[in-house]
Length: 121
Image (cartoon, rainbow, N blue to C red; front, side, top):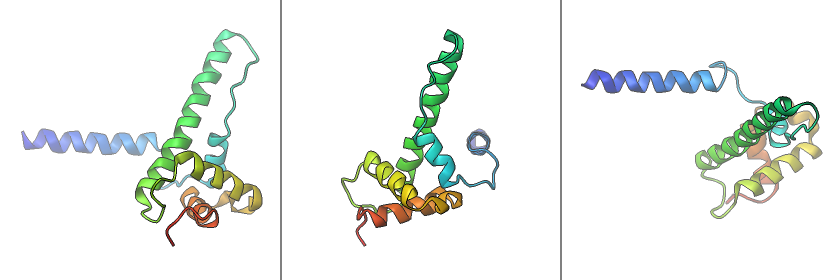
């Protein structure tokens, strides 16, 4: 029975790696910005619109999920700060610092919450 638990854990870990892309690749701030600002395309036929809706939903969900995960991991973010506040600070920071788009999303998130005064320190 213990072997089943180990196998289940290994499968879950493999799924996480596959879902997140290549194991060594980090999400850049530019990629996360694109997901956070995804827009529904209303052109084309009903099937194209449905695909656009699914892709847009996935991107916006990835944005919110990534930021929520960052907030859970970063104990420096003040209590009561919302995902939307961090997202807004992140997007504002990138507008002011476009060259930071190639840095990792987590680095830019940290810089943006500090810049916006959303941290304890």
